[in-house]
Image 1 (cartoon, rainbow, N blue to C red):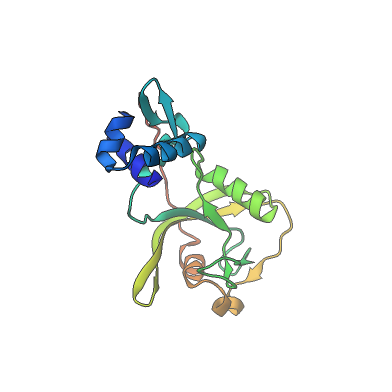
Image 2 (cartoon, helix red, strand yellow):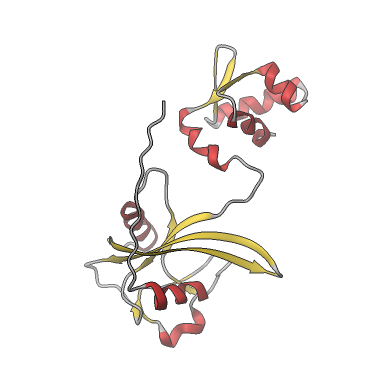
Length: 201
């Protein structure tokens, strides 16, 4: 129900209670309950008789959908195509395989910010972006069905810290296949990524 309520704000800046009630064809006491929950979560706010998205929840607009979306992530190479920093995954879909460090890009971050944060938070390593190597779209298939899609921004980074590197060739079967292919094929490439800032009122 909360998802259906927030979907109404994709095309409207503000709505009155009776407008939401009419659009969703829901009992008023049930609607009142869910509106209060959305206000508690700081997704909606109420000014006079109008409900609207809070400023902090405006960033949710691209994700309010009944469709599953591709997740953009940064994958980080420290080392080279022969020896690089890898770690054993503990989460599905690649649990127990070796993979490149990586993670989501948070709202407002540039790629260097993401690299610094991911390496520090997840691995305790201070690192800086060297270059963007490539951008790829990965579809993960299981039983002839795509179960995940990732927009991979593959980058090279550097660190002054002494970290343990893994030999790539001798661990090929233990490395996530897509990560292995990126390490072997895209590490010497360089890609320019533009950052566009748009101002809306």
